[in-house]
Structures are given as C-alpha cells and as structure tokens.
Length: 328
Image 1 (tube, rainbow, N blue to C red):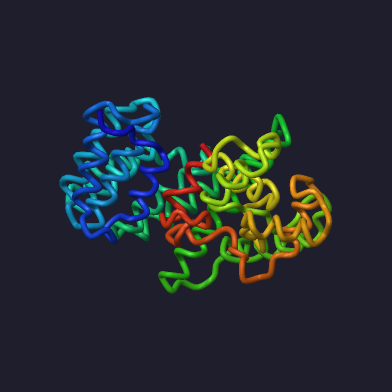
Image 2: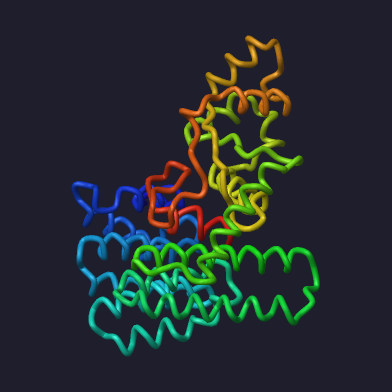
C-alpha cells in the first residue's frame, strides 16, 4: 500500500506549488491520496484538496481548481467556510459573477464575528472587486465598533477578541486603500494610531519578550531527540510548536502584533552556548539566554504580509499557512 499523506507532506507540496518541475504530479499525489483514503488525518482531507486547487489556480487551470474546491466542501461540510470562499473567488475569476458573489455574500457576516474571515476580502480583491472589499471592511468595522460602544462583554477574552478583530480589519482596509492610492480617512488614521499604540505597549511588556525562540522542523525533531526531557516543555509535534508561537504572538501583541519576531535556534548552537556558559541546555533560563544571544541575522519579523512567505519557513504564503491553521 502507498504511504499515508501527512499534514507535513501536504504543506510541503503547497510550498512547492507551481515552482515544482511537475505541478501536475503534486496535484495527482494529493487527489490520489484522497481518492484512496490515504490521508493520515481525515480532518486534513479538505486541506489536501484545497492545496491541490491552489496549485491548479496558480497554473491557470481555474475550472479544475473549482472542481476540487467544490469537492473539498462536500468532503467536509461542517468545516467549509474557507473552502466556500475559495470557491466563490474562483467562480468570480471564471466570469460566473452571480454565483461567486452569492457564495461570498453568504459568508459576509463572518467578517463581524470571525477574526480569520478576512480571506473573504482576499478573494474579492484578487478577483478585481477591491471597491466592494473596502465596502465590506468598512461595514464590518462600523458594526463591531458599534457593539463595543453599546454592549458589555462577558469576559476579557471576548473584549480582547473584539480588539484584535478591529485591529486586523482596520489594518487590512488601510493596506488595501493604500494600494488603490486613496487618501487617508478616519479609519486610516485609526489604523495608524493603533499600530503606534501597539508598538508603545510592546515596549512596556514585562511578562514576555518581543522575540521568541523558534526551531525549524529538522532542528525541532533533533532537539527532542537529543534532550528528551524537553518533551515536557515543548509540544509533541513541530506543527504544534509553530502553532503555539503564532498564538503567543497574537496574545502578546494584544491588537494584532507589531515589532515582534522569531529568532531561529539550532541544536548545535544551543549545545555550544550551554557548554560555554556551563549551564543545562534544557533549563528554561538557558533557553531564554540562548535566544537573547542570537544576533539579528537570525531574526524573522512577525507578522509577515498575508501574501508573503510564512515566517515558519514552510515556503507557503502566510495566509495559507500559520495564519489560518494556528487560530482554528
């Protein structure tokens, strides 16, 4: 029997995309694994189909990409908002405007409740509907800000989530307006103020550093193999490790993040640092001091742009890698 298709392999294929000498073979690998029931985690079935759809879309095969996005919805009907948004965007790009707009419009309320739903704006903007994307962003901001003025939040977590949503929406709106060459308005001024306020708040943080120690996949695996006691400190898998860092960044920033980054560690580097310092490499203080010792050349800023390469080194776009997967 052929090998199981793991989440790591799906991601690796997504990073290769059309840069591979044979993108069609990658699509066949993904779809074949789904057809034959070889997806290691059944919950990744839709993910595999959407990665295949993305490769086809990049290659210009919009019709087949649409078929796979539609299939992803059918395979996992209870977790399909992102797949439906992808399908809506493909319909728009195929000239089936009424169908595409109906699909995206049905999802539009998510902009007011789901911090990750800004993929709707990406689909609109990439399909030539930037003006409508700005309209939706403005209306979502109006609604959320009105709620903050008129409602009492049940918990600090709910209050923090609302603040994070406002930050994310206003920054995306600001960036999109800037791309359109539009002059600043009140929400653009708010975006500037929030970004500046976040920077000042981070300077005053007492309970966490502005940079976090990140282990690339090969180093992460080697780390736990060399010092098994670190299994108690770190998550069981590399995917959970980067997910944890992404969530920590969001929480530390409070309003979405600014002046944050990861420093990249290596097992050999940690061993040498601990040896020179005469300390235990598995000690929390040693790990923190090792992170502080790394120079700026190993620093990767967070967050990257939504269409930029993800900070985790997967090679995939941030909006299709750690951004959505870490906050599910």
